[in-house]
Image (cartoon, rainbow, N blue to C red):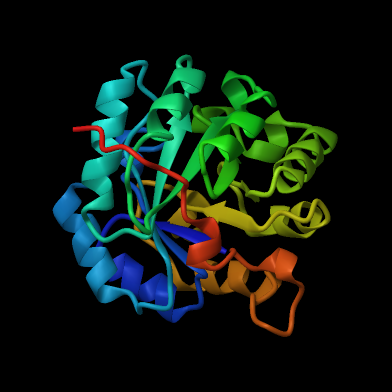
Length: 246
């Protein structure tokens, strides 16, 4: 269970209620809106070290150098995972990020389903050292991911990503009622923002009862469960990167 938050107060709340990954994101700034670096650092400081923190760098940009710099700067916040949206320049972006030196910070790519799902990017992301890929939506007004993408396509995405050796996630205006059918597709991660907020408003505050409702129906990831339920250990997910963008 990945829970997107906007500040350290929300981060503490979702972590206390059992979120497996705390995701730093500004929903008012776009599908993958970035929070200020100081806020991401504060979130990392307030969340238990055992809970990974991910952070987005903003919506996809065709400027690969700007993307590389944004990734480096976000990695300096202490986030464990940096999420990068794939847009029109996805192949060039992947190639550029493959040359970064991010230390132990892991990269996760985000494909925006309502802008087209390019399955050919999966192999490139694996070769570049990405840890995982997520399927999300760009235009939240169009509905949830299951409204936009047929179950068989989501299932193909999950299966293809996992065969490539990456972890697979699904997100995009997901709600508690979506969880049972999505679990049948065996994703490693389900991501939520609006479904955890008051009245389902992704720009509103986190609602504790909504978080509990989602947590109750997603299996808790621990050693007693299948490895497919767990995000790989940091050393197994570390990107194979060699060059700084500066």
